[in-house]
Length: 257
Image 1 (spheres, rainbow, N blue to C red):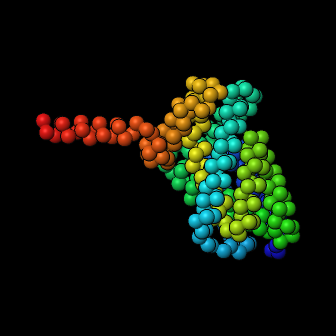
Image 2: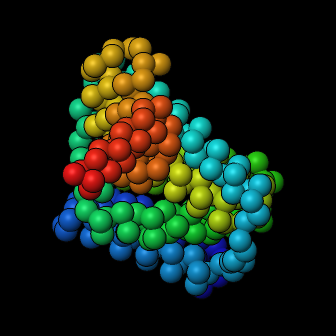
Image 3: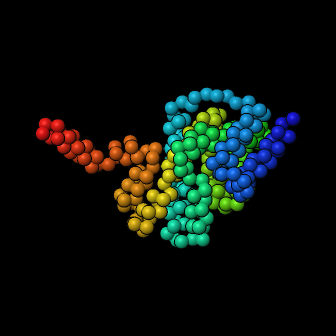
């Protein structure tokens, strides 16, 4: 199989697997989608050479920052849909119910197979192959359009819009650094925040309306994120030290009595 054949067949395979996972769903989503990305990862490894290098700390920081910026952008979009009661609200809620991890194994699939698989295939295979025919910026644009176009198979316009935005950022990150670990870290950062924050976001919006600067908003976001609440929230909570001191004193009194 030559390069053009592997490229076009890979795109067709990605389109079919997205359709099966999101639209047809003969099996549970959390069975189909990880298997789909595992297949696409194998495809990218079979037909493209990959250089595995640990990104330097500066690249890791830049990737993390890009993930946070993307999350902030998507969070604003969610807030806008919620407060304006747009017709997209029903689609947003149904999409969240479908893709939200609910079990530990789901988080394992998400961070170990799905996210790396998307980056290996779409950036490490599709965009890299395009960069041999176009300039880096052109390859990023064409790769992003293909990435977003494939998401039409999911039947969700929100996923298409998200793929357009995030796909372009991750394509540029990959092409500018020539290191697949950079977009993977950015993707993981985005999903770390967004995988568990939608109900929190909705509750906070209902409580405070458009006053997103209210601390209740941040309390909901941080306390409902299982990956960051044990550390970041407690460290950033001004009452944490006081409550911890009080708890120590209480325990000491009990032990002496």
